[in-house]
Image (cartoon, rainbow, N blue to C red; front, top):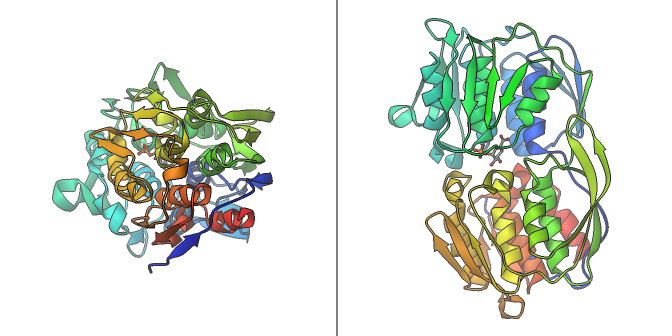
Amino acid sequence: MNKLKAIQPIKKGLSGEILIPGDKSVSHRSVMFSGLCDREVKITNFLHAADCMSTVNCMRALGVSVKELDENTLIVKGNGLDGLKEPAGIIDAGNSGTTLRLMMGILSGQKFLTTFIGDASLSRRPMGRVINPLSQMGANIVGRQNNKYLPITVIPAKENLHGISYKMPMASAQVKSAILLAGMNADGETTVTEPYTSRDHTERMLTGFGVKLKKSGTSITISKVDKMTPPAEIHVPGDISSAAFWLVAASIIEGSDVILKDVGINETRTGIIDVLKDMGADIQLLNVRDEVEPLADIRVRYAKLHGTTFGADIMPRLIDEIPIIAVAAMFAEGTTKITGAGELRVKETDRLQVITDEFNKVCPCIEGLEDGMIITGGQKNNLKFARCNSHDDHRIAMALAILGAAGVGVEIENSECVNISYPTFYEILTHFE
Ligand code: S3P
């Protein structure tokens, strides 16, 4: 499908409240971890979007019961830690890197065979980064091109998995999580060390399931787990990566004053707030409360932004927000330089390339770097109407939509990919037109 979406400029700014849908990372993990228990777990504010449904379908194929009480409320009931069953067919992980990578970790110590496929984007993404460390633990995983790409089959290992100490070459929550989840089923201790700390939802949530983890600097250690004790209910916080589009829209569209409700503000995810504040944004955290994941309502008002510079150390805390930060930078006075963002080349698309190619159609102000970009800002009055392509990347589609809404409009080819993480995105945006 190639749906063309026309976005109109927003004239009066954003106002009122926006209820932010559930966090994608937490939604995936809530179903996976609950499915390893033998008690019913209720999940509320679950993100009903294509990526998370890939995880639901995967867990169902492995014998876990997932009932949908309504769009955002699930009841998950597994058969215990050793209770997953061999799937009858091939599992399709769709577009979801989180589903595939975390499930490889969960499945690598199982006594049955599982084969995964995915869409064109997922089939291009590197899986060696997970298969290599899991193989060092004794897992037997094969894939295309010498065990690097989908289709991938997880074959029962000949012996029990064994713990390793693994220094990750990149900061990645998916790789870290896959290794920790395999470590739950491995003899001895498993330690992963990251160059910088990536999102820690796996660690927090496993702790909530009674699993013991040791943290030291950027290292996490886990030992074999015999039983998981689930909480009766998991409430998924709003996704800051979805809120990010409104944080930027309200910051750059004059007259805006909006409250984003129930947003997760886990500090491993709030790099976008730090960078926008550094650019001069008017952002206030209200009603901050601490649950397994900290939450707040976020008030954001229009402000005059200025350029900034940031790099590798903050990157894991805003890894999914670079497309929308690039939009903010186009409106900010002065230059913004982003480095240390090489991981963006292996996301749903090569996001560095796609940002440069597509955003420059609206205003040629972005110079690509091998690991980032330089954006010449102050372009509000230089934007032109253009037809751009999302390249089937949900975050590119939404960033383009905000660029058009804050400028002179835009047309987006392959616009329907927002369903991956934010199915109601266009509906909310249209409300402000
Ligand atoms: C995710 C981790 C990040 C992020 C992705 C979700 C997760 O990927 O980009 O959208 O849920 O663990 P990496 O861990 O590969 O950086």
